[in-house]
Image (cartoon, rainbow, N blue to C red; front, side, top):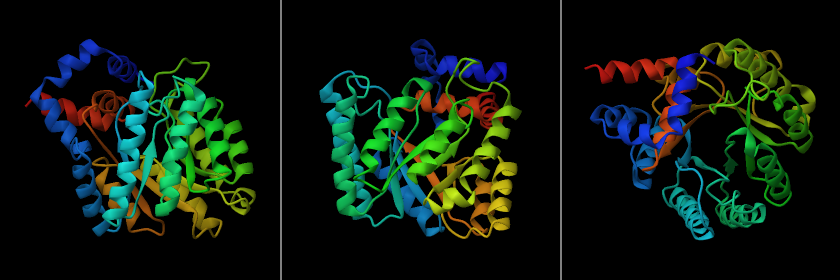
Length: 308
């Protein structure tokens, strides 16, 4: 990871920097490129536009960490409202959830109970829910909760981060479970013994994990793979692997709202579905800073506007 990315990740955790950067008018203008607004209605409108263009979506209300069971219950209620709105608007959309918002730091069973409530509603609507992966401190708990609840709720998926050294082993366990997996590079600051620091190493692992989840035994077990990247080479490699292996379904590509729009369009013109991950909400600062850190083009875009 380059020094600029490391600095940005540190800044994402700083309240002082949050107050400073959030106050810049330029910041708000740039955030609007990557986030349709702060309200659920803004996200629904953006999803409708993308659906009309042929792209599916995933809604993600930004925010991390609650400090009481009441806050966790409130976050759970908000997720349930999202599912209701997706159903009401008849969107081609699913939803992403964060266990830190559901109270996992307050207690494992608190998060399990809250996610179960969400999944019971999703089951009524026939909706899919994916558990986002957060920092490495959450991986074991996230995978265990996914394993427990997926026994009853099959429309539940999880995320694997290619920059974590452990991910190859985690993928093997998920293949045995026949899981739905979103593969991302990873965007949290982690020590070198936990995560690959070199970009090339992360890309190699991403490519390796993609290939592994497209192998025959994974397919036979029902693994569904969502390749989530804005790296054109990795997208093209996944497309090539799928074509060579005669894969026609069980694969999709996912990208963030407002990022690499040309790649979104080019990928949509191919064989496999494209899903756009729409983040929204007032607690946008940590999310925004991680987006700047993970992709140099995002930082360049921000700096160009800052200097205008």
